[in-house]
Amino acid sequence: MIHKLRKKFIFINLGIVTLFLFCVLASVWLSSFHHLKAEALNVLRRTLNLERMTPPPKLEPPKKEPGHFPPLMTVFAVEISPDGSWETVYESGTQASASLIENAINAAKKTGTSEGNLRRLSLRFMARPNAEKLRIAFIDTTFAIASLRNLFFTCLLILAGSVLILSAISYFLAKWALRPAENAWNRQQQFVADASHELKTPLTVILANLRILLSHKEDSIASQECWIKNTQSEAESMKNLVEELLFLARSDANLASVPKSAQNLSDLTWNTLLLFEPVAYEQGVTISENIMPDLMVFADSEQIRRLLTILLDNACKYAEGEKHVTLNLSCQRDTIFLTVKNTGKQIPADELPLLFERFYRSDKSRTKSGYGLGLSIAQAIAQAHHGKISVESTKETTSFTVTLPLIKQKNIMKSRES
Image (cartoon, rainbow, N blue to C red; front, side, top):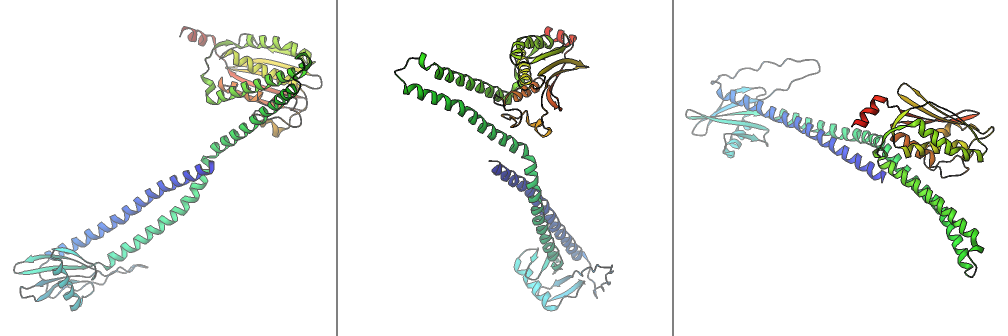
């Protein structure tokens, strides 16, 4: 899909730029064509308006400049008597032969028009009756044709070279512009694959338990209680996974649209911490806290509780050594800092950015349980509340810090009044 999208991007971009460049070059060529044509017609008009000159004026030698030799433009005019005889009344540039003049007169008469272009002779003419005689002026168009031909091939080369250069530029631009879409597509593919894998395991266990139960149809439910409980446990695990997947799907859609109101983050933190102390006690983890009172945030209380639960559960689960967890809630200026720190082994620096990836679990230190979605959900909640989450790890501790914008009392009163 990304490959097709990249090709489509290149073709569209190249087509638009090529069409624009073609129009510009075509305009240049047409402008030059009309300019040379207008110049030739002006010369012919002036020639027709000249009085009879006998003998014809001598042409002054052109001024030569270094590297430039201007061509001589042949211009001549003839007067034709009623009996068909003709005589040259004006001539400039290279002298025209009698046969050329004769052929030019005959070709001009055959056109039946007062002006035109004699392509076979490379001449342009203009005729005007003068008393009893017909005067026809001719100008050589060889130089104009050669100039237009050279300009045409030059424009063609410019167009071809530009297309090649633009193709290369469009290719790299397409790769650069579509890199976010490609990364998103790859993450989506990986997400679907990981989700399918995680769902497959409990389903396999459930189906295996059901096959065992079906193979002992004559047994009572009490005798098969272990298989039923195992099935229930796997079903609940799968239910939790589906709920987490739905939450992340909603966060991708637009979690920021969830209704929010002014909440006392200090009270929410205390309540969540009190509910979590029995869990920590069972795991042999001690918790210490330092919570600044009356810190207000504009948030959804359920999501904030879920964020706190994820961080505390994650800290207790991976606490080692002294098994100590510290929770700090403080404020600096207009920013609230929520930090959850636990003792334990250091997480490698190259793994820290990956902790918030969906289904990521380190093979070395973070494979105890769960599906690897908790920190992804925590990050989604923080971002939905215009905050962010970061992680630091040393040889003895690992800490997760969430920053949220503080709302002041005057802003709270305004939101309540509205």
